[in-house]
Length: 551
Image (cartoon, rainbow, N blue to C red; front, side, top):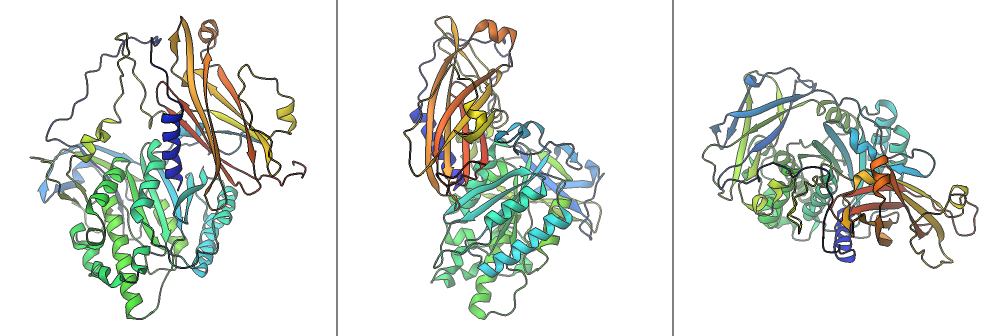
């Protein structure tokens, strides 16, 4: 669901805050000398992250490039680059409050080479299974904890939303887990799209560089709950053969859904280096009858395919959810990255099988087992989006703009009730945004955005630099459903002397919102109307009931 809100926010910003025509943009940097980036008609670079573990599941480090052989449709390829990643390195913590009520996304400046996300999917998870998952994850956080930052998402209703942003703090993760589960599932089965879920996760992780691992705890795909689920039971062929074969052995997505949609989502996940680890949270199951057993096999076959197609690993028929979590987080911070350009490559719109072998026995390898050789990514510009964007301005000047994924806007936000002393005693700002009318059923809140001017791309209008930005807030309730939004566009004239004397000075903007007691999450966005860069923040809310004193 979060991804849909982000898309809606993008539409709002694009169409609600149309930027004026560019006149003359000031730039202190000379015009870039980079040659335009072009993609040859029949070329592609394939990047593959490989995790190597021993029989006990421990990561294997120190392997040389010569130990690896990589095959594309059974043709031996030449490795063009090789890099080993060991451990997560130093990292600052998450968007936890810098001081009461003040949040920042500056953790994006200090990310490790691999990030992990816990996705709790209750769409097909009964309350008893939710309680067991809650017990196991609570035990993991309390007894073992994590040395790397984790984010937590919940899939409930018809989409996903963020419950906790990246943090290593155990108490924050435990509090987020208590917010997420257990909760009463909806009445009757819901047939939700796995493609949509993966797409929403990919969309939100798009701004984060490096490898991302998604630990997807679920009760299996809801597709097989349908009355005519027998039509899809052919997907559950032979789990042993499936786990050692290629994607063509598993018929689940190709037979029951549009292949083009799976092709697109696998392209997106590959582009974003997202590996999915489906984990059956129902644990070890006993004989449930032929029909339910066949359904579960089909669900597990789908888990295997999703894992193999994204470079992860599927886990099922195990009660050791704590141990599974530990195994994934313990091994996937150490991995190898290989790239190659397939020989005699053609965009044949077919699945290309990737196989990686070691010249050392008794090691297990986890990697993406293939890709679709279609032109979708090229024609949509996906393969170019990591390159600098150099728009041509009306006066012929080129300004190099940073990529939106690689350079999100870093900003702070103070979120406090309007009656808080820090708000009432703060001096007024030069630019004010009209507050909404009072609401007897809500509590007035003040949102103060603080954006360093060097995060923006000013334009010169009438000889003076101007910055135009949009700010937006989306409210979500306990179930992640929208409960209101507010967006504003602001154009500010800057002082040249102040910019030269203090290039890192900050712009401050105040926004007022009426929040309700049921509002549990607040998503804030700052959007540079000139460069297109975006910064976002998640803020947990504990809104008092109207009339009660603010603590």
